[in-house]
Structures are given as structure tokens and as C-alpha cells.
Length: 357
Image 1: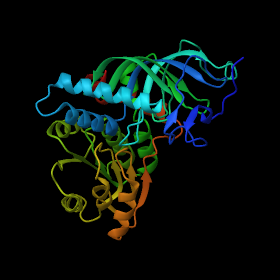
Image 2: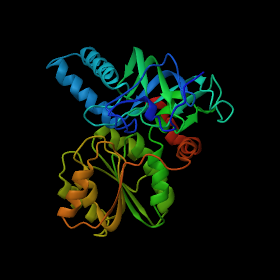
Image 3: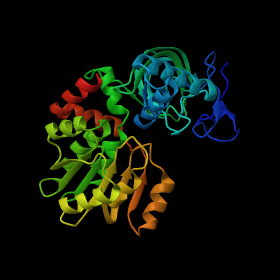
Image 4: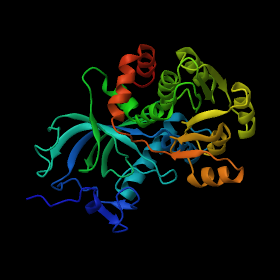
């Protein structure tokens, strides 16, 4: 008879006792037996969140030393991923605190959940909860794809009763669906935040979440609104220009927050942004986002590289009365919403297929 588990997974927490799995320092990743309300997953791919993978790659590069080959750097990436899981029983980046999500096949369903959920053993799913709270065991790292932040593994994971997931749709390739589901909260939140006629600024517009947000923002603001896509690299700048979702695309690589403020002021005739969406995967972008936004406007920090302290105290320090949403990657129906964007926009699907599938 299977042991009874807690809905939120606190029965897996080892240290400190009493906290939930996400903030826990260590959780139980023993997969030899599962609790009655758990789902055991045979894991195929980890989709490391962008901020975390960027940090891991930079850390690995430093560990490998000057002049290291990409192969040597990838070996250090492997070591870091294994170490994170060995140390914590889950994959939570020790510096960013973030995780990612996974793709796999349902291997076993706990007795208390059988017949009560829309899953069967053998179903292919993507988990829509963070790896930073998911019990994970890695037996082997098969391949690392740094261009798309994905790691193919042999291993197992546990989805708690409260965990959300999406079945992989039959009409989309698995890796394509996984890449979109990883950032599903961003376009879905964009749809809730953006209104007809508004000025919307998107930082990191040429990245995975940025492209989806640009597409959705333009649908919402219409012909009288303006979507301004801000990018950091030549490649991402050209990519978002070619997609045609933005009214204006500007590269801000090397610019200070004040310089970006002046640029946005010029592009909006001094009105600034009603909504600013930060999709940048590196730290210290908080004040750039705040300075783009008008008083009573909204800043949505989707990036997991965001510091709440820097955002809140920085805005206070310049007398900016903006409404800030910090990194909420979940909103009801976000998975199907985002997959539908790929179905309805052929150019977006083509770019995602080329980059991620």
C-alpha cells in the first residue's frame, strides 16, 4: 500500500522541515516508490529556464578556464547540473534560484489519483511547474543543446498532486511544444495587460518569450497602439524585424537605463510606455524597465533574473509610481493559449521550429 502524500509535496521536503518544496534546500528524490498522490515521470528533456542556463553556461566557462573549448565548457555544464541535483534533489540554480520545466512520459500514477485526473500511463506531458520544486533524479545526461537551453537526459521526476501539466499535442512537434510551454505565462499575461491604443515596450523582444509577447501585444493594442521591441544583439534585432510584429525595433546593447529612457521618450512623444514587459535573461535590467514606463503604468518582470529588491527600491528611489508584476509565469489557460499562437501564426511557428525544434 502506497504512503499518503501531501497535496503540495511537503512530504518530500528534507530540509528545512515545514517549508514547501520550492524554497526547500533539499528534497527527497528517491523514485523507488511513490506516494499515493504523485505522478512518476520518465524524463526525456529538461528545458532549463533562460536566466538559469545563461548563468550555468557563464559559470561553466569560468570553471573551464581561459581558452577552453566548447566541449570542455559543456563538460563543466554537465558537472554543475549533476551537482545541483545531487545537492538538492531537484534542479534549482544555486545562484538564480530558478529552474525550468521538463518533457517526459507518465510512467506511474499514484493510487489516490488514478481515474481522477485526465492522465494515463504512457501519456507524454510537459510539466508546467518549476524544476526548482520538482523531485528529480538524473541517471545520464545524453545531450546538451545550449542554443535552446535544453538538456536530454535519462532520469525520473515526480509531479505533485497540485502540479500543473500539459499533454503534448498531436499536431505540434514535441520540442516545439516544449519550447513554447516553457514561457507560456508571458504571452498569456501580455494578453491580460495590454489594451487597445496603448504603447507597449518589450525588453528582450527577439528571444523566445519576447517574440510571443510582441505577437500578442500587437494583436491587443491594434492599429492605434505602438509596440516597441528592444533587443540586445544583432541577430535578435534582425529576427524580430523580420517577423514584423513590432512598430519599432531598436537595439539597446551597451545603452544605460537613462539612455533607454530617452529613446523610449522620443519614440512615444514623451508619453512613455503604458506597459513594459521585461523578457531579458540577464540581471540588472530592473531600472531599464521602470524608466521606460509612465506613472501608473505596468511593468511585468517575466525574467527570472529579476531582483525584487532592485526593482522595488530602485523605483522608489526615482519617485516612479509604476505597478510591478514580478515573474508570475502562471495564468489560467496559459498552456493552450500559447500553443494556439503557434497554430494561428505561420511565421511565428516557422521561426520557433527553426530555432527550437
